[in-house]
Amino acid sequence: MSETPQNRVHAVVCDLSALSEILDALITASEPVPLEWMHKWVKRLHTELDVAWLALPDGLRERAK
Image (tube, rainbow, N blue to C red):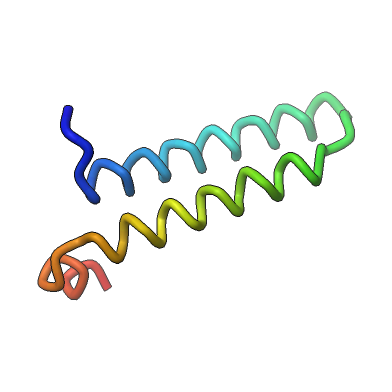
């Protein structure tokens, strides 16, 4: 599969879903949440999503708003 902005956005959304599942498991297990690690992950996903969003064609970006 080629790396398109749409594929990158989809990958980020999948990573966010995985992060949500990890956090649910940590809460259920009463484990401390690794905040520094989580912050780095969220920051990376935010950056990747920004890059992918800006790479979308203008018309597609406008329709997505």
